[in-house]
Image (tube, rainbow, N blue to C red; front, side, top):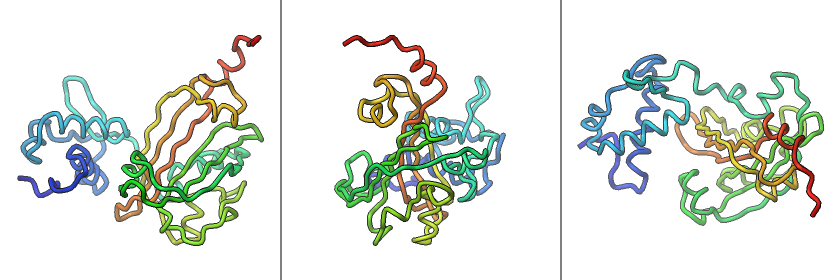
Length: 252
């Protein structure tokens, strides 16, 4: 029986297998462009079912860490999957690198018990006390995104809303964690998919509910693999803008 996974923990086996493979990529045991072992080899290595192996691989393909090639197998993605903290693709850094005028306006902040879904992302128990905030992102003073972040409250004692500024580098949550708490985010797992805009976010973005937007979810980790933050947000895309401009007027 494989000692690389723990069968006495509630963490799903597929997730544990995926994390082992991810670490091999991060440490250079598996290099970009290199094929990973076959599904059969992974079954034998971890003593798990084929379905478990496939789900683990699917997670890493979805995260952009692995690539499937038809009739050839699965290989490590040839593009970098993460960068150092000030290059790690935070929304703030992405925009500032291109000299875009960006702002982050805080909508709310609260201390709340973790829901089951968020608790799973942060690897804490449901009901664990979290610090959570909502921010409205603006580019050239136009709203483009609604972001929500969740952190175990114990990580940021004495947090004040003015720790996060509206402009400049200090609007970055990563920067805030580093500056005020000495927490450095070293890597993150991110997924992006399309979703219809919910009414409460539509009001903040001044857009029509139901138009397609991008949902971005991210789990951020320290260098030693500890989960620090879960965040999600909806982002206006070019398709969203096109559909909004060409929407049929409502006479209700």
